Amino acid sequence: MNKAVENSIIKDLQLAHEGHLKIDWAQAHMPVLSRIRKQFEAEQPFKGLKVSISLHLEAKTAYLAKVVQAGGAEVTITGSNPLSTQDDVCAALVEDGITVYAKYNPEPAEYKQLLIRALETKPDLIIDDGGDLVTILHSERPDLLENIRGGAEETTTGILRLKAMDKEGHLKFPMVAVNDAYCKYLFDNRYGTGQSVWDGINRTTNLVVAGKTVVVVGYGWCGKGVAMRAKGLGASVIVTEVDAIRAVEAHMDGFRVMPMTEAAKIGDFFVTVTGNRDVIRGEHYDVMKDGAILSNAGHFDVEVNKPELAARSTSIRTVRRNIEEYQLKDGRKVYVLAEGRLVNLAAGDGHPAEIMDMTFALQALSLKYVNEQYEQIGKTVVNVPYELDEQVARFKLESLGVNIDSLTDEQRTYLDSWQEH
Image 1 (cartoon, rainbow, N blue to C red):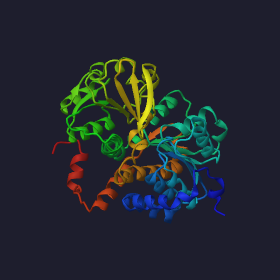
Image 2 (image 1 turned 30 degrees about the vertical axis):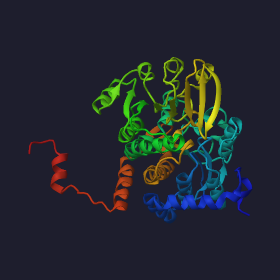
Image 3 (image 1 turned 135 degrees about the vertical axis):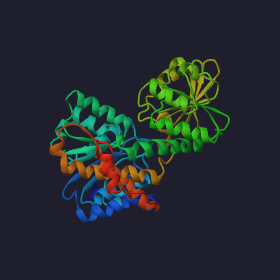
Image 4 (image 1 turned 45 degrees about the vertical axis):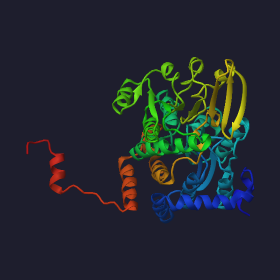
């Protein structure tokens, strides 16, 4: 019997057919990852190893898991957000021999237990999203650390947590900062987040964006993408920031820049993209327009402070799928999308497959790299080697049928020389 069927915790194995169709569609649009899969099938870089993955568990992630499995690994996967897990995809993975501990919208205690179950397989390598697996290993279950050689982290939020641990000397194994690779933040964070956030908002609200005022909270690479797409949809865009350099950049990109206390008065849509907590909070709710719509595209559901909003409300009700209406004491209504969780995944399908093709190619290659070099790397956070970053970009260009120039020997010599020419 399929070992994964015996061990997995999912909603319903009978949903597998629809999950296979979703995975097949994603695979057909992920040529870079498919190329790496062929490489892994031949080389078997993970033969005899266990890999535990915590990512948003939908079709594109499922294909990454299958690629790692093709490299010889025994793969276990769990979700990184309770509202982004797709039950049919989970069922399909189980049929394919991957152990899954994930369900859509479990209770908080069950969600935590599913993460722990993925670690109780005693993996050699991990792929993390937001640092949840790493945090559990270091704080609650250090008994599961013994086999771990290293891993790779997907998000800005996770890398911030890792670097804090590294700085304090607490990190027990090497982690590759995949989010900081060029082929991650330039494309996934900017174009992926930019498109998928508005996919989620638009399908959830069924409201027009053109002519509205959109407040983008944070102007990192994700914020840049969200602002760019809002502008393309016809919105007037305001950016709020705490970083002076990014604020200047937003200004020169043509957006209004102001504090949240001012932006809160005029925004129609709000999108938080900071990785921090309480960036929309009590004093902002006090001045918001009737009908303001709040959403989050950072990692955790703490950017929009829901307890402070609830304290100002006389009633809370679900008015559409993934839309909660907060009736304030003075009669105004404020709406929160997807419980303040990642709107592009909790209320949408996440980034386009072609974008995640590059990101997950980086994840697969980074996992191979850390497995080969973990002893030399040491217990620290490291960047993706540039040659892997460039390799992914070249594979992507080849899949698009795009050719570029190469330096001549004379040009290379010129660039490498310090003497007068």
